[in-house]
Amino acid sequence: MFKPFWKKKKPPLTRLHCLGGNGRAAVDIVFIHGLDGDPFLTWRFGQEPSWQTWIAEKFPSFNVWSLEYRIRSSWWNGGSMPLYDRALNVLATISSELDGNSKIILICHSYGGLVAKEMLKAAFETATEYRSFCDRVAGIVFLGTPHNGSAIPHYLKALNVAIRASEALTELRQNGSELRQLDQWFRQKASTARWNLRVFYETLSTKGVRVVDENSSDPSISGVTPIGVDTDHIDLSKPSEPDVRVKRTLNLIEEVVHASAPGLGWQLTSSVQQPFPPPNIGIQFANIRHHLRSDEEVTNASGRVAAAFTPAESQNVGSPGTTSPLPQEDIAEAVVARFQSTLELP
Image (cartoon, rainbow, N blue to C red):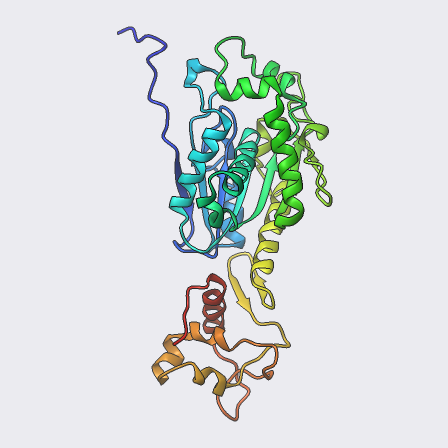
């Protein structure tokens, strides 16, 4: 039976897909696709290896999410919301899902980077009820995001869109004051927000055109240098091996961990992630017992050990008269509990 081309499947609702983690993790990593993107195909999720694989290997306890939302270049394919409206929609969706105290890292492809920036701007200026949520954003990775809009005419040519451009595409095509204001706001805010940032751009053409080049990708922020990658715009978000994109992103995650837990070190292996106190920090058993009620708590509630971590205390961690350390897993649990700020001492 003939099906009219305008009667296509319903556009997707905005939602977060959880790809891995352990619930209330210390860090939530959110992938945001771009124009005409997909929450799975854009990132090669479901294929091995992928972003999900590399993050899980080094940070197995961190949550990985992928955002799904309606963002089409043409109304024939579903259209889109204006950038500001979409940013509010995404902000409300993500904040409702990630309602803990975790640090948040955003990994964005193309237009997804503009959504992330507009989302932060809205939380700080107009939708201030989300301010505390955006204060948790600690890092952003931009993959082919046209910060200054200079590559938009090439973008339209590459997409080969001739009629019925969606709202999102129209905004980009106009290269109007809104994008310039967003770029200026983000540049100024980055100087005080202390976001960890990474920027990548393609060096190969898409349908004969460089969609986002080094100039368009540059957010003009001191200390943030765009890195070129030998790929086109579409494949920029799809690394098939742990190249500079992956390694620099994993490094950003590690920086966020260190910045969020000052005074603590992290022991990272290919399959195990364990925090540990640096050599100059120790705990006397008496200090630990000060916070515990019973022997059972000594062994089963090791999260309270974190409360005794201070640089002024001695080097040894063990029972009275000994230098034997507490089990590594107890210390790990204790530091994670402190890091997540979920433990309240009596």
